[in-house]
Image (tube, rainbow, N blue to C red; front, side, top):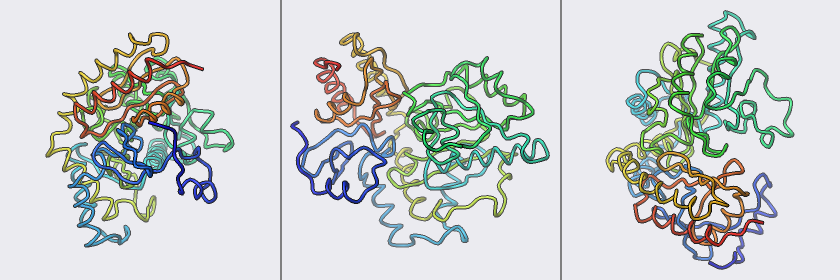
Length: 406
């Protein structure tokens, strides 16, 4: 593929869009399945999927039909009233999560914000007063969003810089170091822990099953909420509906978003008893959360995952894909240190800056996302075929074989 062509959208971005992101490299105008097309008519294999959002790829016919049907029937009534889809979606999530209740919002950041409010309420119940038990233990290299609560829970300088003072009460401990978490979790002052089962933005770092089980034990011993952030790694991305399932743990609360809506903005938390009564009327709210359109989109995602057997497909196809990806280490041991992740959430870990590598892969027709300053992140749609997975390895092989680090 040649260099970027002129695009009238670029000048509009330059003049009118706040530059909180780097200047967009190109403009996408159409998508179908695992492919997207830009304004110049070039086609790409999309293994970024809007950062793990497009779980069913682009414009899956069932998803499109369900959203169109809902848009023609009812779009929005606010949470002052019920809508049919929200109740159906909460019931569907309960079948996946177990007994408990769901609270809906619009994004992963909002879902984590709700978890942090839940932790505060639990701390008040636990201690009998405000301001005593409100600490939250998080993992080093974590990413939990860009709200003030999310930033405070994200121990990364690039996220927090310029926005201090942040919320207090957060303690960071190394992922998979159970002894450090044992020291950090204080029975008197810690209300909750918040862990990504697989860190995405931090560089595709999986939490080990042994570590998760150990943290669960500490939480039970000290009456601390076990809150799991599955915003990027959940909703089938690892071959299980939730990535934590492999560890056999039972979280007190789960945050989900991204792939849940399949391209439509939605977030949710699920809370287990006896903590599902902590939020009461007026203690939290959202204008759009769990609206009719968003619920229809999420229900369509769950319908397709089940009817097309996508969890089984991801499990079956990811093993040979990972094996081929690990061949990149042998191809360029000077450049590639390892391949890690689970299912369709994989990081090719480099010994150089991944950003220019991702740009070169885009030029070669493969969309990826950098992560943690070390990883080329691959996030195929759950519907990706074995042939498309193989194609991604072929493109990576061609680009990395000839890559010359600066």
